[in-house]
Picture (spheres, rainbow, N blue to C red):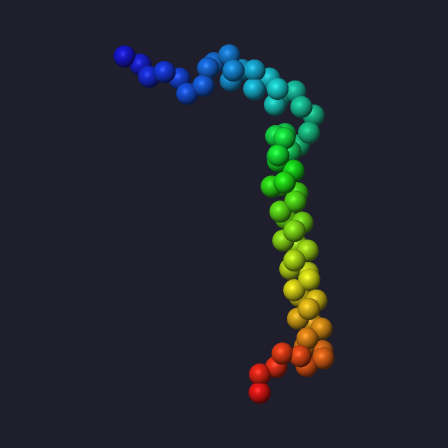
Length: 67
């Protein structure tokens, strides 16, 4: 009594052939991988640069100090 496979072997081999024949970086092979590999790091970098810039501006003009 063996358990049924999670995915059919033919389907698995088909997916392996598809991903092995793509001439892109490994982390950009899926259709939505650009969002997680490129979009999110760019958004984090942009927001951190904005907050650092705003902090420097506030410090140089004396805004937001507690008395």
